[in-house]
Length: 100
Image 1 (cartoon, rainbow, N blue to C red):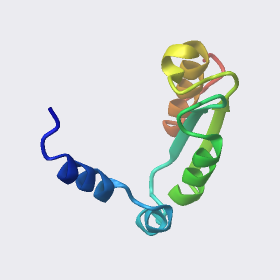
Image 2: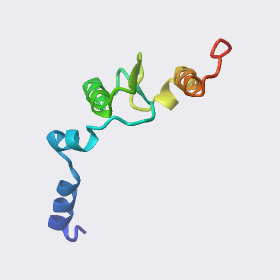
Image 3: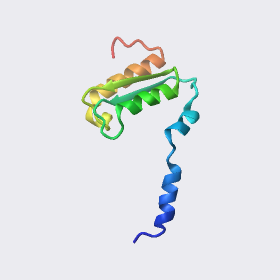
Protein backbone atom coordinates (compact mmCIF):
# COMPACT_ATOMS: atom_id res chain seq x y z
CA UNK A 1 0.00 0.00 0.00
CA UNK A 2 2.77 2.46 0.91
CA UNK A 3 5.49 2.34 -1.71
CA UNK A 4 8.62 4.44 -1.40
CA UNK A 5 7.56 5.67 2.04
CA UNK A 6 11.08 6.69 3.04
CA UNK A 7 11.64 8.66 -0.17
CA UNK A 8 8.30 10.43 0.18
CA UNK A 9 9.11 11.36 3.75
CA UNK A 10 12.50 12.76 2.69
CA UNK A 11 10.88 14.72 -0.13
CA UNK A 12 8.35 16.30 2.24
CA UNK A 13 11.11 17.18 4.71
CA UNK A 14 13.08 18.92 1.98
CA UNK A 15 10.04 21.07 1.09
CA UNK A 16 9.84 22.56 4.59
CA UNK A 17 11.75 25.83 4.89
CA UNK A 18 12.84 26.77 8.43
CA UNK A 19 11.90 30.27 9.62
CA UNK A 20 15.52 31.42 9.69
CA UNK A 21 15.89 30.52 5.99
CA UNK A 22 12.49 31.93 5.04
CA UNK A 23 13.50 35.36 6.34
CA UNK A 24 16.35 35.57 3.85
CA UNK A 25 13.99 34.54 1.05
CA UNK A 26 11.30 37.10 1.87
CA UNK A 27 13.44 39.89 3.28
CA UNK A 28 12.69 42.22 0.39
CA UNK A 29 10.49 45.23 -0.03
CA UNK A 30 8.02 44.57 -2.81
CA UNK A 31 7.08 47.47 -5.07
CA UNK A 32 3.37 46.61 -4.96
CA UNK A 33 1.15 46.92 -1.92
CA UNK A 34 0.26 43.69 -0.12
CA UNK A 35 -2.84 43.36 2.06
CA UNK A 36 -3.28 40.38 4.36
CA UNK A 37 -6.78 39.52 5.60
CA UNK A 38 -6.59 37.07 8.48
CA UNK A 39 -9.16 35.32 10.63
CA UNK A 40 -8.66 36.16 14.28
CA UNK A 41 -9.79 32.64 15.24
CA UNK A 42 -7.79 30.77 12.56
CA UNK A 43 -6.89 27.39 14.07
CA UNK A 44 -4.59 26.36 11.23
CA UNK A 45 -2.32 29.41 11.04
CA UNK A 46 -1.87 31.58 14.11
CA UNK A 47 -2.18 35.33 14.28
CA UNK A 48 1.51 35.43 15.20
CA UNK A 49 2.31 33.92 11.80
CA UNK A 50 0.32 36.70 10.12
CA UNK A 51 2.30 39.32 12.04
CA UNK A 52 5.58 37.63 11.11
CA UNK A 53 4.56 37.51 7.44
CA UNK A 54 3.63 41.18 7.51
CA UNK A 55 7.07 42.07 8.84
CA UNK A 56 8.87 39.82 6.36
CA UNK A 57 6.94 41.11 3.34
CA UNK A 58 8.05 44.71 3.85
CA UNK A 59 6.80 48.18 4.55
CA UNK A 60 4.04 48.20 1.93
CA UNK A 61 2.25 45.32 3.65
CA UNK A 62 -0.89 45.85 5.71
CA UNK A 63 -2.63 43.34 7.95
CA UNK A 64 -6.27 43.24 8.98
CA UNK A 65 -7.87 40.68 11.26
CA UNK A 66 -11.50 39.73 10.95
CA UNK A 67 -13.06 39.14 14.33
CA UNK A 68 -14.58 35.67 14.87
CA UNK A 69 -13.20 34.59 11.50
CA UNK A 70 -11.42 31.31 11.01
CA UNK A 71 -9.26 29.89 8.25
CA UNK A 72 -11.92 30.08 5.50
CA UNK A 73 -12.73 33.78 5.67
CA UNK A 74 -14.40 34.11 2.24
CA UNK A 75 -16.89 31.42 3.29
CA UNK A 76 -17.26 32.14 7.01
CA UNK A 77 -17.36 35.95 6.93
CA UNK A 78 -18.08 36.66 3.28
CA UNK A 79 -19.76 40.05 3.80
CA UNK A 80 -16.95 41.42 5.97
CA UNK A 81 -14.26 39.84 3.79
CA UNK A 82 -15.70 41.25 0.55
CA UNK A 83 -16.20 44.70 2.05
CA UNK A 84 -12.58 44.89 3.20
CA UNK A 85 -11.30 43.49 -0.08
CA UNK A 86 -13.29 46.10 -2.05
CA UNK A 87 -11.90 48.88 0.13
CA UNK A 88 -8.34 47.71 -0.41
CA UNK A 89 -8.76 47.32 -4.17
CA UNK A 90 -10.40 50.74 -4.38
CA UNK A 91 -7.50 52.30 -2.49
CA UNK A 92 -5.02 50.69 -4.88
CA UNK A 93 -6.90 52.15 -7.84
CA UNK A 94 -7.61 55.53 -6.15
CA UNK A 95 -11.38 55.04 -6.31
CA UNK A 96 -13.78 56.94 -4.04
CA UNK A 97 -14.79 54.51 -1.26
CA UNK A 98 -17.68 56.52 0.20
CA UNK A 99 -20.26 54.38 -1.62
CA UNK A 100 -18.67 51.01 -0.84
